[in-house]
Image 1 (cartoon, rainbow over the protein chains, first blue to last red):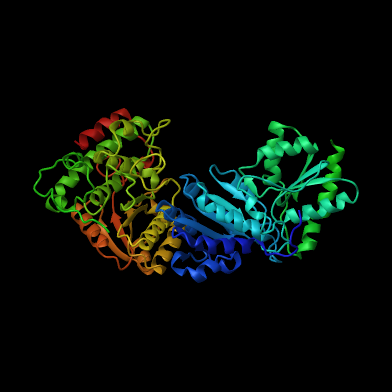
Image 2 (image 1 turned 180 degrees about the vertical axis):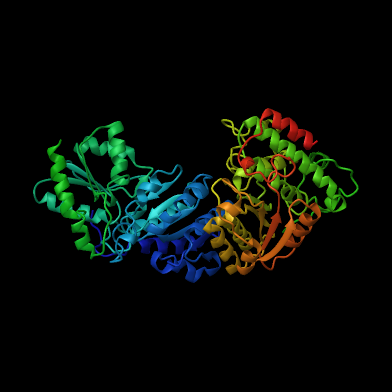
Length: 315
Length: 305
């Protein structure tokens, strides 16, 4: 699949989707003093009467969203991924437990937070939200897919958590094919039979780079954008396991409990298959530039290549 | 547009909310006109609710009688006067909202809904059992007439603020009522919500604080005394009323004032006695979350008869 080489960050796609969703009067947007970063500011500029500033008070924001959802609104509440975690129990008890359809967006997910360092690097958000009954959990890989998946939330009947990223990455999708993606269905980006690389978020691009380099050595890797972490596309994982015989998961997240954890749970229960997980290895991050941090934490394309070689040997 | 319900039942000698409901086909109603004639009728409903409370907690062998008995007079006062709802259609979208943030005091809510005919005697008899309509803490997923899934303290005022903002966006006149415990004000989220309600000038939001001075482990003065709650809400921009939470005249007057003044949010500090109405439970921290024994139930029912 050919893809345009330039694009925006997934947070940009979230912001542009909110603008498009504004035509539905039920849609309301809640911010916690980070609208310029999450890109909900785009909605605010044109729809101030349906944008609610909650100040730096994420716990309050989650329950205000729940109250609005119980009154017929479709709230989109956003802040940094790490600060949604501060309100975890509010999301669990106030939103998901009563099944109120609130859509939470955590931007600046993973280690890609500029050079802010470990306090802002949420590397456990996918894991914790995945454990909550009723929650849909997504992590799109580029601006176009983030926009498409956010638009689809308008008709989604469950609360959701969408992690977006701060950094711009080359587009994986094009405007022609992005509407083919669906919440809950993984998407094959590159075909291959030797190893399946299942990635999410900004790591899909790294997986594509890794697959290109592996192909130069005669290894054909299948690359999958698993933008929906929950519900996880078990049918696709099963097909990949049969087709490739080994799997590598890739995420800008702890190796515990996120995409890798979810795939491991599925494989061990349904079709035991050699698996390697690329992610942050049970440690906190630190300040640093994006490329050097990814190399330091062993989550760049080189780490993916090494994991592919290792898992192929285990077949 | 909001329908104002006429005081058509003024001349009727009613003895229970259920009687009213059946006589008027359970139409949406406000009961205020009647109650302004006879607050003793409200106190009689509250007495019946108290019987329900102690009986359901005893039968379940668990629950929170103390905070239910302190809260029930205000709840009856609210449902009996300004509160707009439809017992035939508890999901009526333009109903007022009652958000019981201190969700462990669920027996108070269930007893009110039982007296209204929204839930049955069988429902409250099954309190806390597997599959029951009446979950341990109030839960909007399980019980008709419950507007909030509570149980974790500090969240209800924020939820009410969301309901109030949504009502304003819809140009609806519905009022939002939130009941919190005084111990609950130790949660920081209460003050996040208090700040935001003032900032957003939400006049259709009212909170009543059940000021019984006892929390789970002990008296608040031992655990974490909050001090002058009214003054704190006032400093956050709220209009504050201080009432005797067991005096129906003061209860009804405060509800009338808050319901009919939309210029700012109201905080009603209802000074109450935990366990009110049952001598051995009154002002007794041990009955925060303990069921009465068989012998204690007999005494309680005698005192409430």
